[in-house]
Image (cartoon, rainbow, N blue to C red; front, side):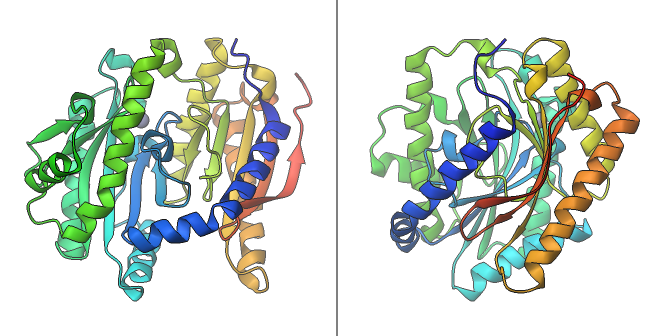
Length: 353
Ligand SMILES: [Zn+2]
């Protein structure tokens, strides 16, 4: 059984720490933004091992995460396209470029440490990422919004960059001690039409990942640590304060088949309990909705959304994964995106374990 802290108090403490760090880093983030203005999004699987700020050693709030089972998305999904388009319009209104990491994941050491959302089929996951990238290109053109396909290899936490042609692939685990100029050449060879601005703003992530891979290698992380140990099922948005790797399955509200995604995540969580990888006493259903404007209806709507999503998820779990239900502690709230502070609306400790 892992000896790490679990449960609601741990989560609230983690949020308080990160809200403080987020505030303390405001000046640093503004400076970074001044130097690297490109808006960066990452479309990712809900898998708790995929934490890009950790993997790229990037401050919180720089990479905007979007999560769904398998990292599957479709720009035809009504809610997803709204959110993406708002994000793009926000960037355009500030004269910024957009970089979208369209990701899939796998593990080099064992196919069964790969993506459950694609039944461990790396090729299918990759093909879906290429298709989604092409959807972005056909909608937003090749100018201000640049999608790149990126594999996330979880044994070494390495980014695997696919070039514009989809076939040229650079595994950052194979890049060592490169100079700035060598890395720039590498990115320009992968992405010949990428604007300079985006290349410059992608560079810190690439360098950060190369540093992170070296640290993972130096610690000789056992493969067991690269296996699933998630003990939180997060539903909703605003979870980037959950700044701990391998902690939560996060299901965004984007997929029109949300109930299926929640069911799958609940089954994976139950699997982690059954296989003894997590403490069944500390398992949490965490729901969050986001807002920025505390004075208006946006805040009140976020509260309603949080409560709705929590009940929605709970009903699916009761019906489809009833054995998980008795283990669940419930934490429902909303997250202020300006401060990353999570406000508790409802908190229920598990009663029967
Ligand atoms: Zn996955």
